[in-house]
Length: 367
Ligand code: BMA
Image (cartoon, rainbow, N blue to C red):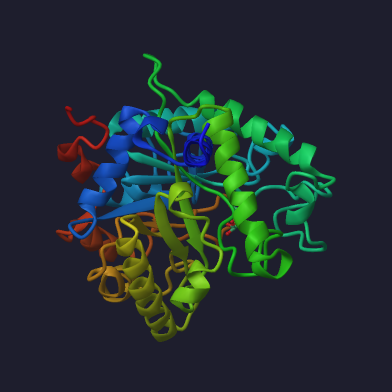
């Protein structure tokens, strides 16, 4: 074989193992990705973490969501978290049983909603939480590291769960997986201070490869999401590469100083939407909100003006915790911000699940 052929073959073999093509994704998953891109700049979808699993004063009731109790509509995007699935627990770190999560994911898909899953994963090196930053764990779980087998076990449990996310007719439900989030901060074991850029990228690529290629999961899209974006260079320093990322995003919360939040959002959104456009990726605000919503006009007067001019396809508000009275981000019906949230719902570019219906986002385009 000539050297040219050899090099060519190696490139093809390498690409078969790593590069994403439409063939790596199911028709419904490709349709979702296309829909996210085409909706960008026209609509901003509203998401809520654990929306249909529990709310401020209820848990596991059918057909219920605080978003719906207040506005009449379900959110367009559902956030879930599979932290603790990796260690074989029946419920996640916020007590959502994985059986209920599966049911709610299937229901959301059947109504035309979108599911995204984050992963506050246990530290495989010592069994402590996602917030355990006592050691440089990432290098120890990569191939050759002494906790690599444990990490493989974690991933195999995730893959097994993801395989069960399907409709009665066997259609695999598209899932936007968002692992190792807020990695530009240093509060999770995969954070900036605890691994090099190369190690973070290697962990990401290994994870994608394990789920998508080794396990043949064709229903996954991957979302890369940092904490507040400081600069383009910083945001991209640990970017795993275009073949490993479908959606680019960031997390940021309003924590009292509304002006500071607005300023941070403007910078993050400017950088995010620029780099996402350059790579032909969808952009999203993967977590945001204002705990307890102390400003009754926050949704229309602070959040909306901050996001409205940027082509982000969704924003996800964090969870309305049950049994933790001060930890909620969506107004329940009696909350002082409920009227404003309803007004936000009615804004023409804001889209809840009822507004998604006409777009048929999972309908594969005809060849
Ligand atoms: C945090 C809080 C925690 C929760 C974690 C993972 O922001 O909501 O209570 O355990 O997210 O969902």
